[in-house]
Image (spheres, helix red, strand yellow):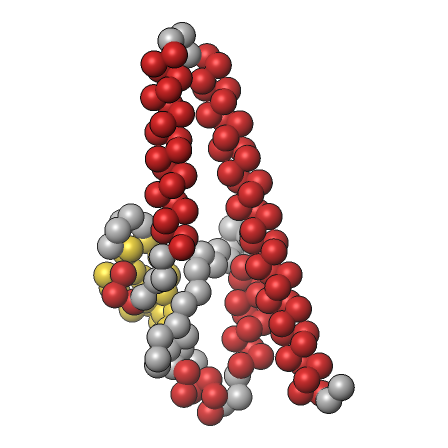
Length: 150
């Protein structure tokens, strides 16, 4: 196997491990949420109250799953301000138009990444951020790309 092929294989392996770890984390979080709802339902007196709590939980889970399946674009965000610009792109504080959550959005021009041969660095950064659970490092919520940017 050539050096380039082994690098690609390692990057693919890292991406798959990261994706599987993220799925496992989501599954664990969903199980915790479900357990909390079941505990709350046990404390309720009437079937109507239990049904209302269960319906609210299912509705919220469906909303979250729909958001996860939706392909994200920069049009889904409102730019609040730019917080940094460097050799590899720009970082902005943005608000998601639908759920009103605040995020940091990093945009990197694809041409720049290709020109500077930074593909491996980008993959490594994505992999690292998707696994981080540190209070001092921003969590990676989602990645997406368009014709021009990562």
